[in-house]
Length: 275
Image 1 (spheres, helix red, strand yellow):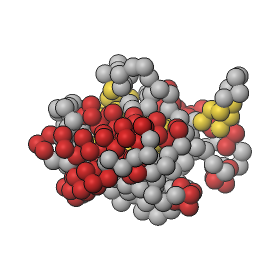
Image 2: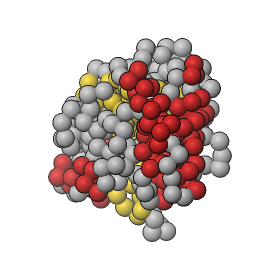
Image 3: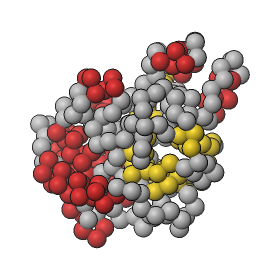
Image 4: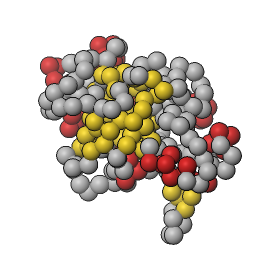
């Protein structure tokens, strides 16, 4: 576990395709699906640009998080952005989200305070067993086979013999043709599922898959803001600062003020990439 800890500053969701999301008193994470009642929840991609490209792709963008410090930074340049303004589900404080490696697990709430199971978890378990076992072996390359094996293993090896609800997402990844960055993200999610199977911590949890790719809609929200969240470093590498994307590992409620615990994956660590 990392010594890094943070706090939930705000939570947001919307059941319609809008750029911003209204703040809520609480959101409920559903393992393997996303935020209950949010338009971007699902096993397969839900963001419209990704759906147009290939609706069968796995949804590694179930939960969008942004560090609140970004809003403080851009406020100093004249851009007022409220929590949820860039469409994130969780706004954090005190966490360097962009600096965390892929496969990092974030757990919400105080230790020992699981908050109960999220609605739909039982259905997710059933889907995980069917889809994880039936499709987990489908792969056309070594990376696909590794992800497919993890999907099947998650379904068969979860606590109590129940299927792991992230199984369908991993099965979708195994069956799809993925670009290199997305395949690495899927591998990291699969590895996190394996680690979590033996965990005794039942708090709501997500696993970081990658970076959000900022788009022109940001300029539609605040003219000129895109250049503040998408640029290049001194070596010419693309720098994306519009938050991170995650898959829900364990369901439950998340509220403003909840502590956030960071669990780093075993090294060597891989930097978050666009998903």
